[in-house]
Image (cartoon, rainbow, N blue to C red; front, side, top):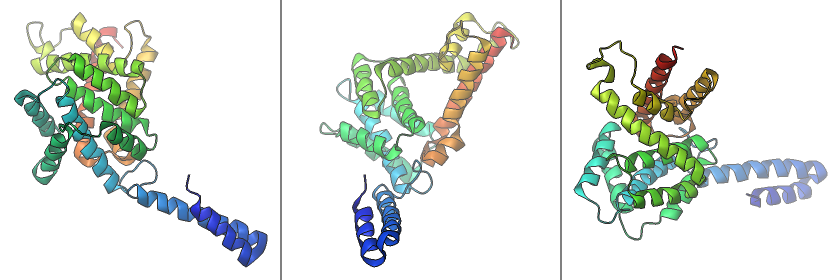
Amino acid sequence: MQLYGKVIGAFLGILLGGPIGFFLGLFLGHQFDKAKQRARFGGFGRGFGAQGPQAQRVFFHGTFAVMGHMAKAKGQVTQQEIQLASLLMDRMQLHGEVRQLAQQAFREGKDSDFPLDETLSGIRTLSQGRRDLLSFFLEVQVQAAFADGELHPKERELLYVIAEGLGFSPQQLEQRLRMQEAAFRFSQGYQGGWQHQSDGPGAPPQQSEIEDAYDVLGVEPSASSQEVKKAYRKLMNEHHPDKLMAKGLPPEMMELAKEKTQEIQKAYDVVKKARDM
């Protein structure tokens, strides 16, 4: 807690104006402490938003540095993992200097002395308890680990460390892993064009597709229609690109948020069709 400004302000207030001066000095000192704290963390107040470009850079750098650390979890970083990281940068439409910064951060994360705990602590501090931002950060790491369609035991072990460093429980990570595994199959199915193959464009979704859609939404097939709607709205609210950007998501990462909302919408459409909602 910042107290320096309050103490000095209150003391000077008493000297200059008695009790009234005390309260005035206390107020001005409080404003000084707030300004000092904002400056310390790149100028952000609520979240870090547009007023905290430095904090956004820290978030962006940390995302790719931790991703690079994840790539090394299985041992030597392979050419395939580098290509997968490049594909993620393509999805984010990173070009020029911004892409070079992402690549540099990725390389730093591969170093044996990469300060993972400090990096995660910094991200958590900068996010100031904004769970949706921290959730997005964790989600990107889970996506990176699942990029090849498999989750190596060493990657899973590291994801637990990352989740704990961001303030998430093992149970919350497990749910996210189930959702991402289903999301991977779900997106692969859509890219293959489920409803436009042998069954025809108007055919009902297959059972496996429906099960994956439920997992993407994070609900059980036994959930009521109201519970399904509630889960859908919650996920859309958490991943809405405009809301995330207002809370501090770097603009370079907006494409991932848009992709996620599209994925959630497709899953909800499949469930609605299966339930005739």
